[in-house]
Image 1 (tube, one colour):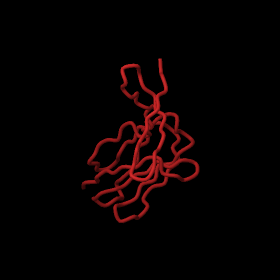
Image 2 (cartoon, one colour; image 1 turned 135 degrees about the horizontal axis):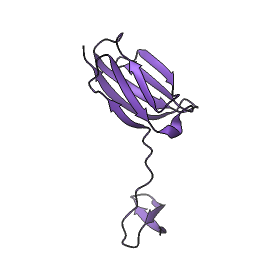
Image 3 (cartoon, rainbow, N blue to C red; image 1 turned 180 degrees about the vertical axis):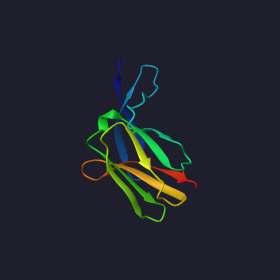
Image 4 (cartoon, rainbow, N blue to C red; image 1 turned 120 degrees about the vertical axis):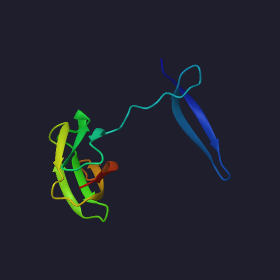
Length: 116
């Protein structure tokens, strides 16, 4: 059973009120996971990388990949929960991925290495 408790934060200039769920033992309950990328492998990658994403984001989010220097390499609509990205045309180095929602807001990001 979840109970709602009050937590007061006292700062130098203000007092903030925060609600949080807790058990009777006083321990805070963890919030549901918002992780979109469940697995990403192999890392470091060579010819391809596989992203396994939360099925709830299929057809609603995009996978954006760019080099560490900011050059866009992939911008893919997520159409299934397992995505294989071809990296054969990419140079070795560090790459950044972003999961973006339908409003183009970044909801998750990370990095991976390409080795050749």
